[in-house]
Image (cartoon, rainbow, N blue to C red; front, side):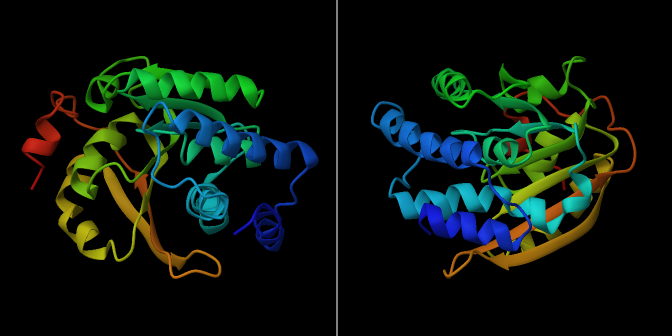
Length: 240
């Protein structure tokens, strides 16, 4: 998917990119590839692949679950790495307020410079592990929407993300192909953490055999104070 095809595909979904937005994606690509030579951010560096597997992939929730993306919504992206999905979402929907949580300082340095280059406003960077941030009163149950892409399996991911979602807010997981069995295994954890699965949608990225699954979970009650547990525990002892 080259930049022109990217623009064309977004138009089909009623997102008509401005010149500024096109330029932001172009700058994003250039800076990602340049920075990747010094910091391990992504294995995907060919332009067509970045536009399809990073940029387009990141914004699929906007067409799939458009109803949860309200103007001015506060979104927290857990383990965003090189900024996916939150930065492409922010470019397409500038009114979003973004908080990015990542445990690696080098990635946050990259993101800080990227945000400045793209002239993005209302983006906060938080250095820390999701388990610690989820227990911090500044962030706990403060977000309308929490996203995570390619971070952990759904059981572990739910413990990272649901404590950050406010009641009646949503947790949106961007997963690879056939995430159904993973979702089945995580039902107990989701329920314990105060969530309820609203929908899961399988889709293919345009003109490719790249399969994805998007999972939408609503926060229906507060998360018990003991979750998330200490850093490292959710991975070692998942909720079953």
